[in-house]
Image (cartoon, rainbow, N blue to C red):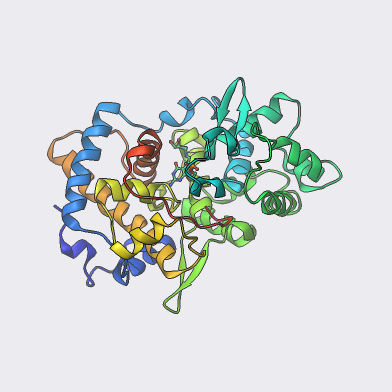
Length: 365
Ligand SMILES: Nc1nc2c(c(CN[C@H]3C=C[C@H](O)[C@@H]3O)cn2[C@@H]2O[C@H](COP(=O)(O)O)[C@@H](O)[C@H]2O)c(=O)[nH]1
């Protein structure tokens, strides 16, 4: 059983992790006012997740099974993953607050006669443009407006519902130009060269990403201290690791350093599972669909406590697995596999999560 000790003030993450995100998450969780991590909730959620994962035999091979994800782990897949995780943010619709708005009035992408929203709409838009012969995943192509105009980018993200547009399209174009130029001027035109420079260390690769690509710098001042959440930088590494199933370009000796990715979906599922608990005041704020500013106290508490809660879930589930020698049931268990599982769980149970997601408009998640 994990004890208070794991989450107590004597626990010093400085010795336990090289990843600045984990230290930040611990600091936030220790100073949080409107989000708590009840240990009994962690125990209950751990056994529930363990049993669900056991039946699903969840592993990294699930990543390529998603219909819109690349099926072959090669250099093209790396370019695809980089572009997707460069733009993997803020899909929720302003229209969400009007309950009588029907789903098909919101932004969505039609691809192969299927309609996609949210994260999957991004994947669908990119796959659709590849099928239309647009080399959208080639950095030298998307770096400059002369080869890829803003108008064509608008066309790539055209919605199947009229008068709706992907949120933050202008900011997405800025990210595309910025990252495309960094890759062409500093990394010989492909993110694969960042992966090679990381020397199979995800902590190194995380640093390369945030040092060279400003739009991945998900950093905030919390109670006068700089905290690092790095959601897109970490999921970029995790998607490569999962796509390559931990081998070849996906082999990272220190992959267990990567934490949960602090988005707006997984916290909802964590609350539903009892692993985190919002104050009444926060719940009312969310129910009013109030915007939470990026970097505001409530928003940082939700994100930081979610990361720390997944860390505690991981430890407790590891302990259960060892106790029940279920290693073969869950071959690989780290914060990535746990996060992916909980995110897919959130999507599967989207209408029964019992709490609103928090609405922050940002390019960071
Ligand atoms: N923490 C975490 N956040 C994730 C993902 C994913 C997709 N990952 C796929 C790849 C492997 C997994 O098995 C998933 O199938 C997207 N997001 C974030 O969610 C939000 C979009 O939500 P919605 O509007 O409802 O689609 C947005 O912030 C986006 O950045 C994840 O896995 N973990």
